[in-house]
Length: 337
Ligand code: EPU
Image (cartoon, rainbow, N blue to C red; front, top):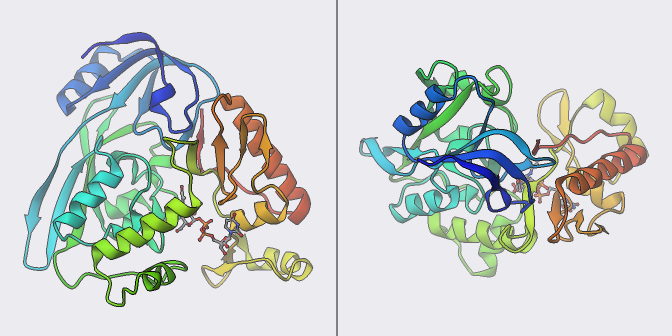
């Protein structure tokens, strides 16, 4: 385990932003992680997972600890279900594909989401009608100050839309080291209810889809809308879809009757931020090397040489324009560093 100085993080963030870590270390086991935390008690630390949900706007004057714990295994099973434990540093998409290959169901709608297993609970990742919380059982985490291990069960994680306890009550206090999911071995709950999935399956004449078919459909849809970070730097959805009280939404909706929305409770609606950004005229707009993606307006992209600050400036332009057009504030989903 070698601590490197003045280390470039360009290959460690999916936006592909050039920023330096004052110090950088990759840890490959919980024992190594404990060691590093113990030895650097008084040093400022920054925990780095897959780097897929952050925008680096400056160099990091801290010891960057890259969580590179690998491995996945069955920890329990019965005739219907299997409990799979994935280590935090496992690539999420590879983990999803591995489960599909074993015929373990529940994660297929979340194929091709960038990032690592250990960061999935932090923002309760989700796509195409499924969220992590639907199959999540528990996660192991290490307390940064004391190095004590703690198991968080589902209730303790306090999951919400792109929210969890790790972004709120215990923010910056724990590092997730592994996650357990409960997946189906048979009678899979195939979920094709979300928008484009059925159409994508129909295109290929699939009427009774299995796990792999759903995964392939999601991959095809994502590829058609979302840029591949290896080709065009990005961090997935840059903004959250705003949630509004119905009482606040009604006057806005009267003014803009064509506005899309989804009822999410008796009193609240969710409005697709991608629609707002597109209607505000920003989809596909480029500002130097930063811009709004041409196929999905929720995604900001780095055309190559953008700095984090330039992308942040674009995000502010997007927020201001949407607010001035519709009177709705859209919040960043990505962590701005
Ligand atoms: N829309 C537009 N213009 C756009 C984008 C979307 O008008 O540029 C409209 C669509 O026509 C549709 C609605 O907005 O009526 C919703 O669009 P879509 O189904 O593409 O989903 P989204 O709300 O834009 C969310 C997630 C994505 C996830 C998709 C599919 C958030 C912040 N984003 O996007 O997550 O893949 O649903 O489930 O909730 C991510 O978090 O990185 C991510 C990509």
